[in-house]
Image (cartoon, rainbow, N blue to C red; front, side):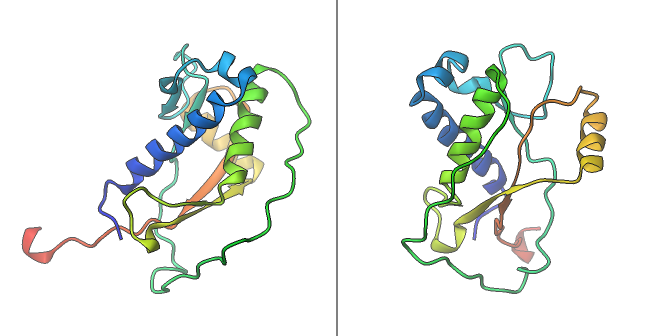
Length: 163
């Protein structure tokens, strides 16, 4: 289990993991010059330096795992299949590399965390209506985006004596 800072730590860890993958790819490295160009914030078209945004836009309890100890995948599981994409352009190069990196890490072990702190990363495709509503709420034009579910983060309960 973790304290309430785990969500920020997850975002920083994912940003750093993406940065390491971007640095290893010459074409993407030319587009993203440094790690801070990967923003941990809602998308903002006025932010000229940002090339990629990581944003936890929906955080909610997992009702199915609330009382379940969890199941760990076995070691040596098969690698994911290739990731087919059918567009091009600089933003797509960055997004495609990010998706490739995310597909290679279906589980994220939090640094310094216990065994139960490992998080599952799965690609999600929300319905188009939900995506449109999200961009409208941000007051931003729709852009290339990939949605991932990262879970389950277990946050320690408050100590009743310290509330």
